[in-house]
Image 1 (cartoon, rainbow, N blue to C red):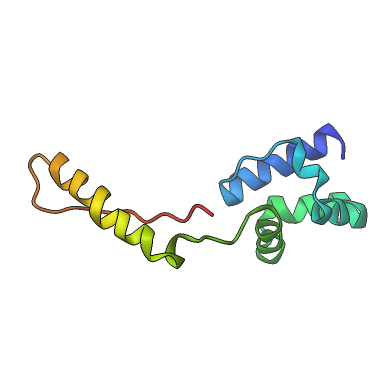
Image 2: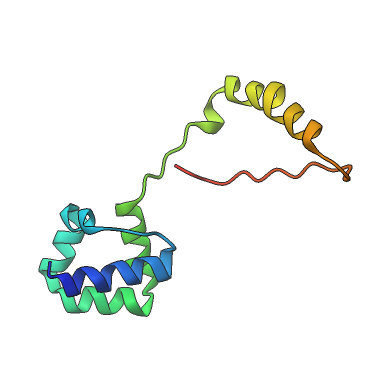
Length: 104
């Protein structure tokens, strides 16, 4: 993969998926296969935001597994440690907001 192709790929991934990538992405089998099959076509699809291509790329470059919801101990730690800490830190509100963001 040329430097220009890597730059196009990186920009498309960041713009469409919100992920930052570096030159290690070029070593992924999926990327290599797609680039060998037609680099210009592949990159054009990514830049246009082709839904199928973006979904396949996202699956190839991310880890789609999380263990957070599989272990009761994690919920208990959340209840015993995190929630009381956050409730104590509240100043002028009667509500507690919690964001559960995927980070697998």
